[in-house]
Every structure is written in C-alpha cells, then in structure tokens.
Length: 605
Ligand SMILES: Cc1cc2nc3c(=O)[nH]c(=O)nc-3n(C[C@H](O)[C@H](O)[C@H](O)COP(=O)(O)OP(=O)(O)OC[C@H]3O[C@@H](n4cnc5c(N)ncnc54)[C@H](O)[C@@H]3O)c2cc1C
Image 1 (cartoon, rainbow, N blue to C red):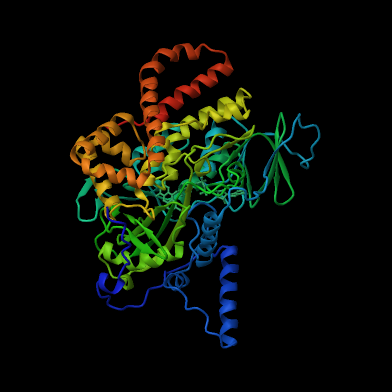
Image 2 (cartoon, helix red, strand yellow; image 1 turned 90 degrees about the vertical axis):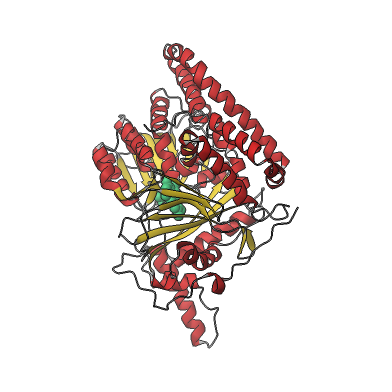
C-alpha cells in the first residue's frame, strides 16, 4: 500500500501568470475593535523600534500584508467576527495551546456547586431574580428571545455588544423556516435578512466528477441584520440586556444560581444558559481542558472581482493531500456569491485535523489559500479587491452534544457541540434544534426540573451525530497511515456518487448535516457493491477502534429509528397523561429518538 505523499504546492507553476495590479483597498472602513487597534499598534511599534535599531525584522507574510491593507471594520464577539491580523495571531495562539494541552492541565473553575439554598446575597439595588440568564449573545439571542416569548423573565449577558458579524451565514431556506415556525421571525423578515440567493450548487472531487444541486446552502443571510432584529424583539418582549459585561464565575445553590460579572456586579437566576461558543470557559471546565478529538480549521476571504459568480460550491476538493506549513492536510473548498455586490464572492478553504498530530497554523493555511484559491476559482489574485479575510477553528469532541454537568447550567449553540463535526454550520444547526430546545427549556424552568440529570435530557445522546464522527476521521489526513494520497477524494466521490444515484431523499438530508439510518444503509451498501476495493483503505484510514465505535452508533441509529417510527406513536397519548416530571422526561426521550435518528428532517415538496 503506498504511503501518503505530501504534495508541496508549486505556486509559480500552478497559478496563471498574474497581470500585476496593486491590491485595492477596501473603500470606506469601519471602527476598529479596541483589542485589534491595540494589537496592531503594538506590532507596528515593535517594527518601528526594530528598524530604528537597524535590525531587519522578519518580513511580513503575504497574509499580514493583505490584512494590513484592508480596514478590518468593526469586529464582533461571535465566531468568524474578527478580521484583523492581530485577531488571527490570537486565534493561532489558542490553536497552538489546544495542540499542546495536557490531560491533567489545570483549568480555572468557573462554576462552583454550593450545597444548600442561597441564604444571603446582595447584588445591589433592584436586583431581580431572572428565570433564565443567557451568557453569550450571538446564537444566545435567538434562544433568549424564544424563551422571553414564552413568558419567562430572561436576561442576556454579552462581553461585547450583541451584534452579528458582517460576513454572511450560508444556509438553506428550509432551515431558516424553522425559526419562523418557532415564531420569533416572520416570513417577511426572512426576505429582509437574505442578502444573496443562487443556484445550482456543486459538490466535486478533483476531476472525478461533479454533482449539482438546487436549494442547498443557496442563501447568504446577514448575521448583523438577523441579530439586530432578534435583539429588538427580545427587548420589546421584556428581555434585559447586559452588554459589555463578561461572566467570571457562577455559584450554583440548591434554589438559585448567582452569576458574578467582571465589573463586580452579580445577577441571580434559576437557570444559566451557556451560549459562549466553542471557547466557553464553562465548557473548558467540564471537559477539563481535554484536547478535542478533531478540529476543523477554516480560512477564507470575501473578495470583489469574480466575473463568474452565479453558482456556489458546497464542497469541492481540487487536490489530494498537500503540505501546508509543516503538516499534510486534505483541503476542501466552499464558495458562495456574496450579497455585497454582483462580483463579490466568499471562498472558504477548510481542513479537518487530529490535534494529536498537530496541524498547520491558520496563517500558514492562509498562505496556502492565497496560492491555491486563484487556481481553484480561475482568477488572478492581484485583480481581486479583498474586502475581508475570514478564519476560525472548531474543536469537536466525540462525546457530543455535551451533557449538562452542573445543576442549573445548560449549554446551547456551539458550546453544546450539537453541530455536525464535518461542517461549520452552527447557525444552521441551531435553527434545527431551536423549537425543541426552547420548549424543553421552558418546561424545565416552569416545572423546576433544573437538576443536571433533567438538563442532560435536553442535550441527549444522538446516534446520528456520533456516527458522523467516522466521516470526520475519513476526511482528515493522518500521518503514518498507509493509504494513497488520493484516498480521501476517492472515498468521498464514491459516497457522493452513490448518494446521487439513490436520489434526493438520500443526498439532501446528508448535505444539510442530517444523518438518517435508511439512507446511510443504502449508501454504504451501494459503495460496498460498486467499490469493494476501497474497504481495506477505509479500515486503514479510520482504524479498527473507530470503526467498532462507529458500529455501535450505527446500531443505535437503527434502534432509535425503530423507536421513533413505531414506539413513539403508541406511547405519545400515554405520555400526555403522565404527571409533570415523568411527562417532561418522556417527552425528552421521544425527542431524543426523533432527532437522534434524523427523523425531524422533512423532505421538501
Ligand atoms: C469562518 C466561519 C464561517 C462560518 N460560516 C457559517 C455559515 O455559513 N453558516 C452557519 O450556519 N454557520 C457558520 N459558521 C458558524 C457560526 O458562525 C457559529 O456556529 C456561530 O457563530 C456560533 O454561535 P455561538 O453563539 O454558539 O458562539 P460564538 O459565535 O462563539 O459566540 C459566543 C458569544 O459569547 C460571547 N462570550 C464569550 N465569553 C463570554 C463571557 N465570559 N461573558 C459574556 N459573553 C461571552 C462572545 O462575545 C460571543 O458573542 C461559521 C463560522 C466561521 C468561523
């Protein structure tokens, strides 16, 4: 079996000869975030001092030169909301510390359980007891609004301001409509937040073949607009906003939780919702700083100057395993027309890596991006007006979603790990679960079922999410594994081709991050019949342990499908007649079966 060959990219040969033209500056500009302004100031100061002392500092990377030429605009707190070079460096430091993390590393304690009721507290004048306090205002504002609409007294704490990023979220209309069903956004408002709409969209793997689809990830919506609408709605429904305040610690008592804020203030509530994203300090405490099982690294740019800009790429792979920095990576592309102008296009390049083996820094990936993107998009980099550089890291854990670890504290959004490990569509994932979560949280608060066990039922084991782990493993280049460098693309193409043959009912849920038993069985069956020679490489790439683990989830996926299809309809009338606590528990079981088997997914007419 050949060993993976790391193919170093050869920019001069690969890229069409550029017609040199100075990179244009982005017109207009926003306010720079304070952190960024300080970071840049420091960087420039050091460079100037070094020049004054006659030292030749390291030449700035192409990434730094490009980023320094663009006004980074206003940066916001949510994932993908920062665009400056200093923010990139900060995230690269976090990525390095993830790779270096030791299992026994000391993690700051944010949540402390205090036995007994809260007897005495002083949170200042007029401090009221909230039903729910949501920490983190990106996806948190959607949950907060849904709960406030149900009549709960809700507050939201955000360390910056509650504001969505400028860079669009790509999503399908079907997913957006789930927010309309929850009742917090109208169909007219959906039209207002859509900035771009395009069809068809492609899935392609080198020159092996292409699959074109309509209405999947074909909308670009404005996070800034939708978060603004949500915030207005939240406030007008009586919600309280605490901006510019950071959560520092939580004391959980038998009857209440008290949140201590970085400005010295405190707020009492019955339930805390942790919507602080992938780097939530509470999640870090729960996971004891453990290394994630996988990491998705994404870089990209939104740029003006694409003459061909009417279709999108959901997933496209233009090469086999390549070298980026010191690591071998399998790179994938996503590209979508952007709403800011007819020739504006967002291009993402992403890779999934095992942090056990490390991986390239984001800056290294961006250097690779500038070399490969023009070839992939058939453009000349120097002719593009780069409006924004985008980057992010998504740590993923096998034991996801994260079950509640404390009484009165529940994770939602990226913090809960409920999104697929093979995509970075966290907003899309929230839309899918918002109805289930908001109803379940409302019932838990009104029934005072806020112990960790009851809350765990809101983020239950979902075999379809666990089964998608193998896909992440299959998509990542693994050193010292005896498979051909083309294997990942071969495997993905074989799967996509089989799914296409099996029809929309198989391909469409998969592309919207929903794994179901029947389509999975059919796809695997077809791949085994048509491409049996690929099986030994699958075992090599994934490893026996991961395959055995996956087989367990696969069996559970079948079991949950059976339970939800046949047992749920029989039990449902009985569940409705149960006393409050039992009813709450059984309703959560029924939901776990349905969502864990992907049966919440409805095919479009
Ligand atoms: C490059 C990139 C592209 C993406 N594209 C898409 C896409 O096309 N479609 C899609 O569906 N998703 C996309 N995503 C994912 C999406 O952006 C995330 O899933 C979403 O932002 C997660 O929201 P969150 O609120 O869970 O976490 P975050 O976005 O991380 O937000 C956490 C919030 O908590 C606040 N916070 C943190 N600590 C504290 C504290 N101590 N006290 C108070 N507040 C705190 C932060 O300021 C922030 O506002 C993309 C992400 C990236 C990085």
